[in-house]
Image (tube, rainbow over all chains, first blue to last red; front, side):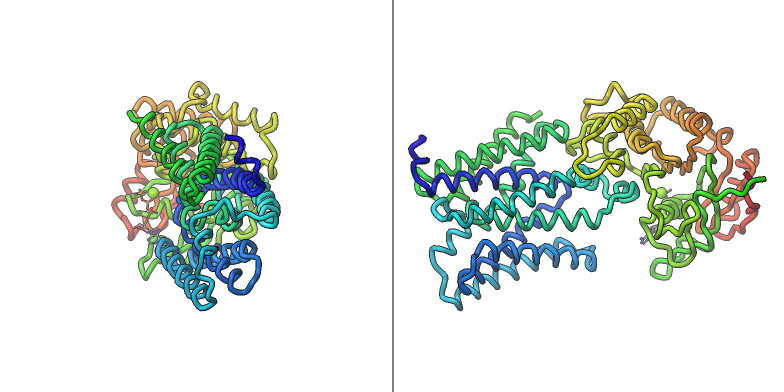
Length: 265
Length: 254
Ligand SMILES: Nc1ncnc2c1ncn2[C@@H]1O[C@H](COP(=O)(O)OP(=O)(O)OP(=O)(O)O)[C@@H](O)[C@H]1O
Ligand SMILES: [Mg+2]
């Protein structure tokens, strides 16, 4: 099994995968508890617009993905406050809008090829040194922000209004959460792919929720599920030449189903 | 007599949604260490009034001051503990132990990153003891009974060591005995710890002896300054309903 680590690309992919598993599962806990699950899907598609722009314009696609995902997250938060009744509709509109834009940019630019496929479903072959550095830089920033605001995020997820009346700046913390989620999603599209990253954010947490344990243990369980899925998924991807995002998501689904069965009343 | 700044001071507060008057021209003051009960029919605007006092809803017109400061400039929200209506209806799958919930009460007292220090832990422990939920601390909040949850929510509100506790009908669905204990506890918090209590309830008869003043809210507010009159005030306001005029709005003297 260790022979796969003889390849440089595999070492890079594994490192990137582990960082992403940590980030996606911890931020995912807040996203799920906050009932923001749909936002991860929408931001993933917006990140794809960044990738498309990057591919066509010859800029770093990962950086572009980060920029576009953050922009989209802010736009969502802005629109939400104006159409508060239809916030899920806002997400749906932006999701299809982004995908359409990405496809058109790529088609016009003549870059509709394998490289785009790898951004959709993830690829272990594609993580470059440059990507790894980008993931490390933005990943550290995101992690610091998540840890700094974890108690506020938890309180807001439980009861937004009581949190606000106790003096927490709810708008600011929400804004930070969507920004961090946007960054994490953009970073993940190398390894997991934009169509599948939503699953890696959401499923480890809902699997962990089946165990009905306190907050800390729920986060730790989600983290463990994400790490195991990424490790297994990448190994499968290596030996069977499958897109890594797909194998990772199938692994996390298996863990979810096992959690459901084990905790069935 | 010493002049005292009221904790809440409301002047000519009105709230109109799509042409419908929900609250109309309400003026009232709430002072330190008072025990105020708010009653009124369903839909009378009690929750709306409280939400405005907490800055969760903006009035159409009127002025709200907290500790003498305009509500927009008020900073010391940790002085206020709030238990909203239906707070005890928790989502059964939310991953929180009783301890997790009561810890939330310390959130705004702690800085970024900072773990719970001794003072935080002590405050959390004290408020769990006070509310009689310490033995439940490792239980998932979703598995508790309605009455136990109610106590946990109040323990969270107390954990920040508030000067004022605002409770919006926290006792619906709780058995009679638990309710009696609960009322006794509120009275004790008010008498012994001098915590100001604003309590929205429908059980005015039971607590009539504990409270200092009674507000009846049904679009307008009727303020009874004499607890002995409490019941007759209630009857009166029921009789007059929305048309009621302010019958007792003497300045509250402390
Ligand atoms: N933001 C709002 N938009 C529209 N209507 C509102 C809003 N806020 C309150 N209302 C209306 O105001 C009325 C008063 O509601 P409120 O919840 O304050 O009553 P309440 O006295 O607390 O009733 P209950 O005893 O049932 O809790 C209701 O008819 C409610 O629908
Ligand atoms: Mg109400």
